[in-house]
Amino acid sequence: MKLFEAQKRIEEIKKVKVSFTIIGNALGVSKQRAFQLKEVELKSDQINLLEDYFQINLLNKENIDESSNADECINLPLITASAGGGYSVLENQKIGICKAELMNVGFQKSDNLVAVKVSGMSMQPTINNGDVLILNTKFEKIIDNDIYVLSYGGELFCKRLLRGLTYLVVKSDNADYPLEKIEGQEQEKLNVIGKVIFRMNGF
Image 1 (cartoon, rainbow, N blue to C red):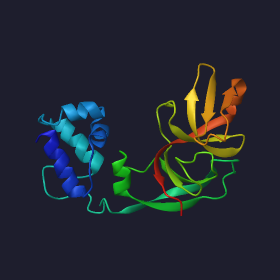
Image 2 (cartoon, rainbow, N blue to C red; image 1 turned 45 degrees about the vertical axis):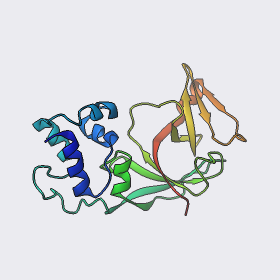
Image 3 (cartoon, rainbow, N blue to C red; image 1 turned 90 degrees about the vertical axis):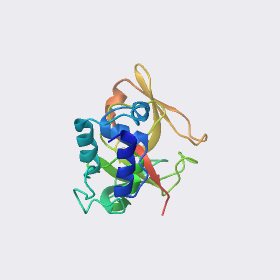
């Protein structure tokens, strides 16, 4: 079985579009490398990786886990964050999201994901007041200009982060909010909760 054939088979079983970014995540390679491999015959260990990631059986018609339907919704922990003045966490709740939506952003499992409801206007127009963000709490490193939810001074904030040699820049998308530079021991008070991987419109 070639990789592009496996990709089509996964889409048939999961009933969702599967990009080469997601295929790369499953195989542990980059999107570009996955695309280069699309005409290549898969080795047994590569098939095993795909089957484990998507919880399917590529060589047979049946799913390994019939309950693992792409249309199935899962519940993620929900906390309240601020993209403005910054509110403390109010209470833990749950929010449902379809597995298909998570797969579209490269996530098959929800073990390290949480949901955060945003309050404030500092990240407009990218993120609006009341939007719900899905965070990956397990990420390797901060990537400059990506959006994160962080805890600082006992409060939660949704911001873009840029890392310097000895400081961290906290940036809003709304030009009315100035840049903040966190330096020295102040950085020890900052805890990055997770990287934003998905946005749900406010409700």
